[in-house]
Image (tube, rainbow, N blue to C red; front, side, top):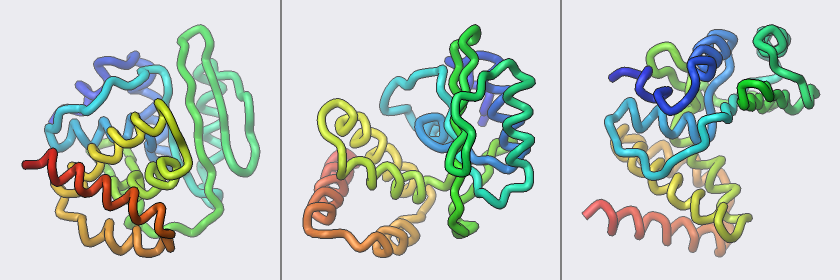
Amino acid sequence: MQLESLFEAYTETDHLIAKDISRLNAYLIGGTAIDAWCEYFGLKKARHRSNNDLDFYTQYSNKQLKNIEVYLKNMGFDIEVSDQAQLVTSNKSLGIEVDVLIDRANESPKMFSHIKYLNVMHPVFLFKSKFSRYVMTYGNRKNTDEIDLLQLLSIINKMNDVDLLEIELSKMNFGTKEEFMLNQLITKFNENSK
C-alpha cells in the first residue's frame, strides 16, 4: 500500500503538511481520512473530493498545538481563526485550507489510528461524527454524507470493527428518527454488499 497514491490528486504541499502535522499529534479527519482508509484497504473511493482542504483533530492538551500554528505560518498560511476550539488557516497562493478541530474532551485512545506515517481518526469515530451531521442536514450535503457513511461502513466491515461501531453508537442515545435513519443506512449497505 502506497499512501503516496492517496495524494496524487493533491499537491506536494498537501502531502508534506499531512505528514508533518501528524508528527505534531494531530489526526486527519473528514474526506482525506476516509480516502486514506480506502487506500489502505484497496477500496475504490466512492466519490471525488476536493484536493485543497485538509482537516485535522487534536486535543486541547496536545503540547504540540502551538507548534502546529507556527508550522502553518512558516508554510505561508494565514491564520483566520485561532481559539480554544479551532485553528482555521489558508494559503491563498497555493489554494489550500488547513483546519484543526481542537477538542477538550478526554477521548478514548481507540479513536486514533495510524496508517504508515499518517495519524488518522479511526473509521468508527469518523462514522459517529459524520452520522451526527447527517441526521441534521438536507439536500446535497446529506447525499454526500450518505455516500461517505456507506463507504465508512465498508471500511469498518473490512476491519471487523462492527462490534466497536455498535458500542460507540449505543452511547449516542438516539431517538426514533436517528435509529430509523441508521437502519436505512445499514439496509442500503447490506443491499449494496450483495
